Image (tube, helix red, strand yellow):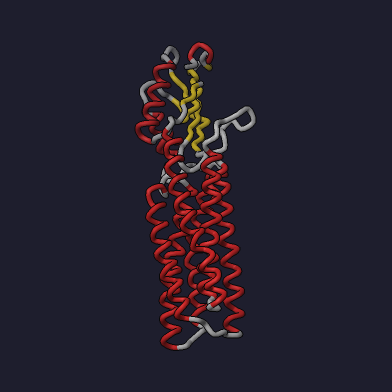
Amino acid sequence: MSHTHASDSHDHTAGANSRMIGWALALTSTFLLAEVVAGLYFNSLALLSDAAHMMTDVIALAIALLAIRFGSRDADSRRTFGYRRFEVLAAAFNALLLFAVAIYVFVEAIERFRNPEPIGSIGMLIVAILGLLVNLASMRILSAGRKESFNVKGAYLEVRADMLGSVGVIAGAVAIYLTGWSWLDPIVAVLIAVWVLPRTWILLRDMSNVLLEGVPKGMSLDDVRAAVLGVAGVVEVHGVHLWSMSGEDASFSAHVVLPAGEAPLAVRRDIEQMLLDRFEIRHTTIQMDSVGGSYDDHVYHA
């Protein structure tokens, strides 16, 4: 049986992601208070909806920052894989929070349709433009790490939703100013909520797959099994498992059967190298069996 482990690259990636999230957190937190005050002052549900999403950005970024720092802790006697799955749990919380915000917006919008209220369209426009600039800056900061971390990806999606929400608020403010139709404000709020929900669902679906230890996104169990069978000396592969701890990595375990007399150590190393080169799988647990029975593990264990 063998084990190979990821290099220190995860620590460097986590450090870079931590810096990105820290800058984005400072930026969005600074603007959040102003948008909440402006939404209340100008009586704009669209601004409050955008502020609610920005609030989830702040919470998401704060949790993601903590998740990365927890995730970088070493494994111990109680948590043999460390804390890396904490990032997935944090991202799942963020997605559920977005669903809750969307429900609030829908309920409030229905009330606004029943009882329209005057809107301060000029102030609404100015704040929305400032919000757009803040979101664009945050997206720029987070874009580099969004393909490497669920939490950075989740924060990026939420900031992007806010960015498009700010565009919607700007359009709504201009339309309200020109027409006086205050009912456009709750429509914009609902459109913001509707736009973000499908993307939130996709993120929640991907994280659920990680928590269920499903095959990592973009990988095929059949392809990996066939590749192992293609290694010289391998006659059978069974008990195959392929999963991810945090969505950023892949782990593999299997029983590999060799012909009697085949050198298991050399074949195992060939399998490990192939998995690394073709699939970027760095953590493997491989039990070597012979056609006539298991090899003596203490002799061939690296």
